[in-house]
Amino acid sequence: MADGDEVPPEIRAELVRLFEATDWRMTTKAETDGKAILLICGYKPATQWGICEYIVDKLQGGFRLTETGMGEPKGSRGIGYEMKNADGEGLYIKLKIEEGEVWVISFHY
Image (tube, rainbow, N blue to C red; front, top):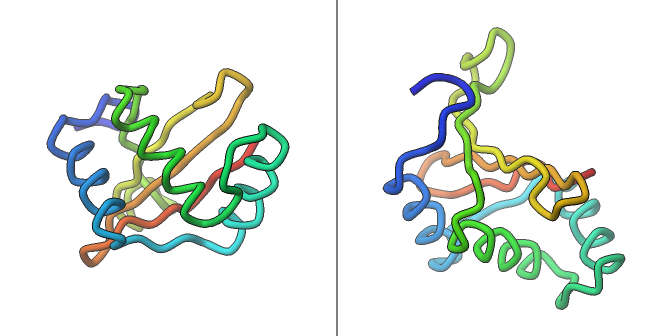
């Protein structure tokens, strides 16, 4: 796949499976920004799990998920998956699968 391509259904399914199995981690920045965004939007709960639920809702709803190379040069730090404008207001979400876990790398405007 090339940068910006829609990910295959198998990757989307694996991301959902990992979230549901609680095999996930989150960067401190994604947690801090995500909790604040959920509070502003009135999305409950404004917790780490609330952020994960929001992402799973988007994944299961078929929101566009694209591949992106991470690091410089692109791809040197693996492959990430991004949702751009996830809420129609500019919300950017970036995920990565690493060592059997899904990482929430970014959740911000």
